[in-house]
Length: 169
Image 1 (tube, rainbow, N blue to C red):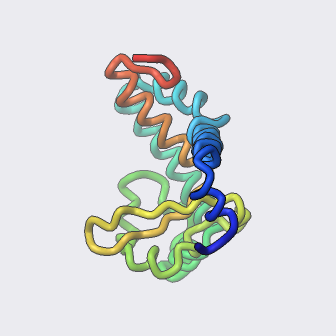
Image 2 (cartoon, one colour):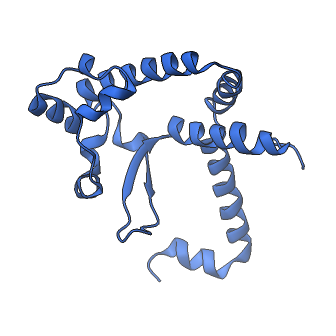
C-alpha cells in the first residue's frame, strides 16, 4: 500500500462510495459547467446558417485563435517568427496551408509549449489520448474546452437523436 488513504479506501467500502460520488460531482461540474449551456445554445443557433455565414464565423474564430496563439503560446510565437509571418497572415481556412502540419512528436515532447502562458498550470486539465496509433499523447486544456466538447456532443449528437442532458430518455 502506498499511503494511508489507499488503505482506508480499500478497507472501508463506504469510503469507495463516497469517493465515487465526490468524483462524479467533480466531473459533472467540469463537463457541464458555466460555459456548457451557452455553447449548446450557440451551436444550435448556427444550425440554419448559410455557407457564407459559416465561412465568416470560421474566419473570425480563426483570426482570434491565431492572434492569441502567436502572442501567448511559445510554439506558435516561435513558429510564426521562423516563418516570417504575423498573425494577420493567417485569417481564413485557405491561409492554413502557410503553416506546417503539427507533428504529434512535438506535442509529446513538450506539451507545455502549446499552452497559453497566461493560464496557471493549476487550472489545466491533463488528457491523454488512447495511443491507438502507437504512443499516447498528453494534451493540456482548460475546463472551458472540455465543456465545449460536451456541448458539441449534446447539440450535434444527443439533440439530433431526441435526447437531452439531464433528462431521462
